[in-house]
Amino acid sequence: MKIAKSTEPIGKFASIDVGIIDSGVGGLSVAQELRMLDPNLRLGYIADTALFPYGDKSVETLIPRMRYFVSLFNEIGTRVVVIACNTASSASLRDLRHYFDDSVQIVGMEPPLKPAAQHSINRSVAVIATSGTVTGDLLTELKERFASDIAARLIAAPGLADCVERGQLADDEIDALIGPIVQEVIRHDVDSVALGCSHYSFLMRKISDRFPANIKFFDAARPVAMRAIQLFGEIDRDDKNAPKQPGLVNVFLTGSGSSFEQTLSKLEDAGCVLPEIRIQLDKLKVPNV
Ligand code: DGL
View 1 (tube, rainbow, N blue to C red):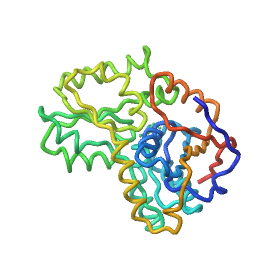
View 2: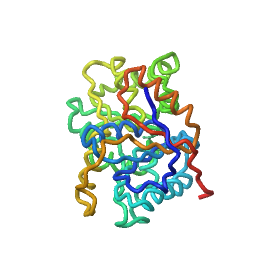
View 3: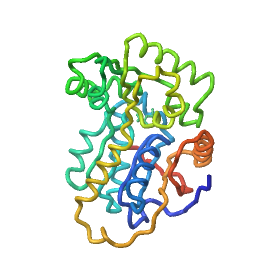
């Protein structure tokens, strides 16, 4: 995979249509959907790899981080920002919408429990997510709203996002993490599984064959991308119809660029489809927020 490099810091970008934030590579699944839906969108992507994983971080840690990253996009005029991370969305969505009011449209990512519940014939569904998402209020609310009358198992999978972040999609460690989940799903006759972590988009395409064949997986990357495009379309901007160059996804990292690149090439070798990206070489510094 050819990865372009840049030295242009985020504050110098004149034009990012949609900003995307995740702890690492997971949100690239949303970036890829955005690129497929509208190749001309100018995309910026912040991966907070220095603090990865978000799955075990507290709400108090994540809220100021998210405020800071959204404000970086806001300062350069980006009006739609996607929190392409279920964990960070669960922790901070309400706060961000209140804090930024109408100046930025925030699109969150939540486990697609609603379509999973609607699809389930056995009336038994599962959500696989990080510990932060499983214990968060957002998922409890989703469960009450969309799955109150069926069995919904919320399965925390600590360590699974870490494997994806290392580009590791198949080996003994993955087997050890996935095995008990498969057993739980079989034991409870689950027939719909909602993927509650953006990192799992890449993984599940590789390992879905370990689950019984009747199970359908639901991934939020496409609907989240569609919502972002809808909101972008509603924004009144002077340059909206100006011709744009089909662009790369501009990636800003808080951690090491070389390990991010290694992960991307491993994911690509494993058959994952990734958007073309340009990495900003200097690390994005996060003040003591
Ligand atoms: N990609 C993030 C999510 O959707 C989580 C990965 C992590 O633990 O940082 O929840």
